[in-house]
Length: 226
Ligand code: URA
Image 1 (cartoon, helix red, strand yellow):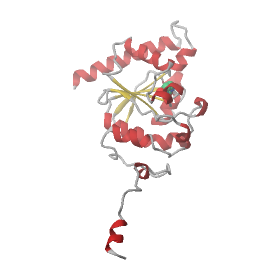
Image 2 (cartoon, protein in one colour):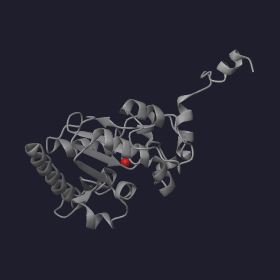
Image 3 (cartoon, helix red, strand yellow):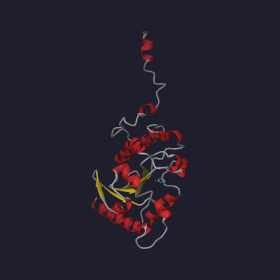
Image 4 (spheres, helix red, strand yellow):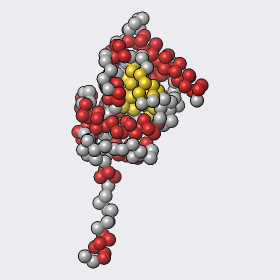
């Protein structure tokens, strides 16, 4: 082989970012793969580790403070999120903003919001266990990069997707669970509150009010001890 041909073997003109993403979800994406959220987001937008990538407009990676003390984890993007590329921007998101504002938590400053799955499931169905597992390395990388002390898990899918099934939401909500050196609290998903609007004592909305106050108290405690 001529020396020119030898060199052209290493021509990188056909090499693309997506070649770096294992399409088989069984292949791990090791901790430390992404130097920042920008590279992670680029990969998510080219990812086909599960079938959800087929129909996405945008991968929905996260929004908020990349150094926040609190990370909020939802289930998966809906239509508004798929269209905008931002999590929790529909009706559920508006309610989530209100809940946070009720205890003076600012979405830009105090929290980072993301989801178990980065791509929208068809008809907003619950992501399958396989789809959750395929996307999990991205969430782990987000946790490493943001390094939150508090994680709020909105609804049963978020709980199952990150820390495994812990029982019914009615039983586990509002309780702190220590996981990998972080404090997790399962809370009701805002869409559940939209379907259950009663504010009576003991109703889901009232329970959420108790939970978010406990979160605010823990946030203050951690900030004071920092
Ligand atoms: N529901 C979620 O769980 N996540 C979103 O981003 C929007 C709605």
